[in-house]
Amino acid sequence: MIDAHVQPQPRTPRVDDSLALRAWRPRPAIRVPVTRVARPLCGVVDAHNHLGRWLSAWVREERGWVVEDVGALVALMDACGVEAIVNLDGCFGPELEANLERYDRAHPGRFFTFCHADWSLLADGREGVSRIVAALRAAHAAGARGLKVWKDLGLGVRDAAGALVLPGDPRLGEVWAACGELGLPVVIHTADPLAFFQPVDEHNERLEELSAHPEWSFCAPGLPSWDALLESFEALVAAHRGTTFVGAHVASCAEDLGRVERMLAEHPNLHVDLSARMSELGRQPRAARRLLCRHPDRVLFGTDSFPPDRETYTVHYRFLESDDECFPYSPDPDDPCPQGRWYVSALDLPEPVLRAVYRDTPRRVLGLDA
Image 1 (cartoon, helix red, strand yellow):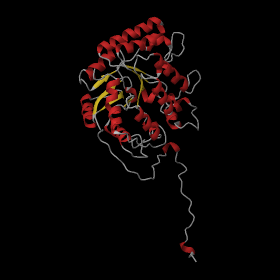
Image 2 (tube, rainbow, N blue to C red):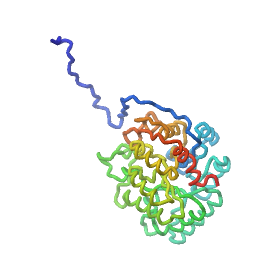
Image 3 (cartoon, helix red, strand yellow):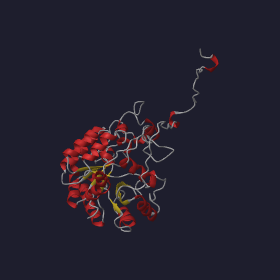
Image 4 (tube, rainbow, N blue to C red):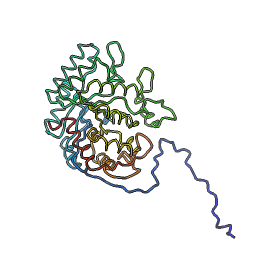
C-alpha cells in the first residue's frame, strides 16, 4: 500500500497569460550535436550580395554605403574563405561607376559588380527599350559583369498604358538578347516566397513576418499570382536560350523543389542561387540534397546577407557541410527564426558537390575568370 503523503499530487502549470505569441521564442528541448564550420571546404564565391547604396535603407536609415570599410570586409572575406563577392547593387550611370571604382577596381578579383536596367524608360515604348539596351552596352564596356533584375519587374514596373510588365513580356526581348550577345549573365529575382501571395490570415505560415512588414504582401487585387509570375519567368528563360539566367533565391520557388527540378531539366540556360532560402531548403533537407547533388553545375552559393558577417557565413557552411539537425537558420540570437517558426537540418553535401556549388559553378556561370 502506497503511503498517501508520498503520492504525486496533480499540479496545474503556471502559464503567463499575458505572454504575447510574438514574444514567444521557443528553444528545442532535444539535444543534438553542434558543428561549427568556421571555414568552408574550399574557397567560395558569394554570388548574391548587396554592397552598394541601393538597398542600404534596409540596413540603416540613410542612403549610405552598406559596407562602410571595404578593407575590413576584405579581411573578413580572407578569414571566412570567401574568394569573391558578387555585388548586385551597381544600378546604372554614375552609381555604377561609383560601385566599380569602390569595389572592382580597388580590389581586382575580389568583387564583381552587376548593373541594373532603368525600367522607367519603358514608358517611352520601343525607343525606351532601345535606350535600355544602349545603357546595357555602356555598362558592359565600363566593367559591369552582369545584369541584376529585381522583383519590381512583374510587381511594380508599368508601361505607358499603366499595365504591369512581366518578365516574359516579348517587348523586352532585345534586352535579354543583348545580354546573351555581350556574355552578361542575368541574375533575376521573380516573385517572392509563396506565403507572400497568400491571404495574411491564421493559415499563413509567415503571418508574424508579414504582420511586421505588411508591405511585403502581394496578395492584392491587380497583382499577378505566384504561379503566374513563375510561368512568365520560365517563358522568358525558354525564349532566350542564348542568354544565361540565374534564378535568385532558388528561382523564388524553394517551396516547390519538384518544379525547380523540372525547370532545370528543361532549360539548360537556367541556374539558381541559394541565397536567403536556407529556411525553406532546411526543412526539406533530403529533397534539397537530391536537387544539389543532381545539378551541382547549375547551383550557385550566395547569402544575400548584407553587410556580410562572420556568423552568417559560418551558419551557411554548417548548413551545407555538416549533418547537424534542428538548428536555427539565422545567427541572430534574438531572432533565430525570422522567416517562420521552424528549425532546419543540414545537407551534408559530398565534397565534389560542395566544390561545384561554392566555387566552380559561380565562377563559370558568371564568367568571373574571364
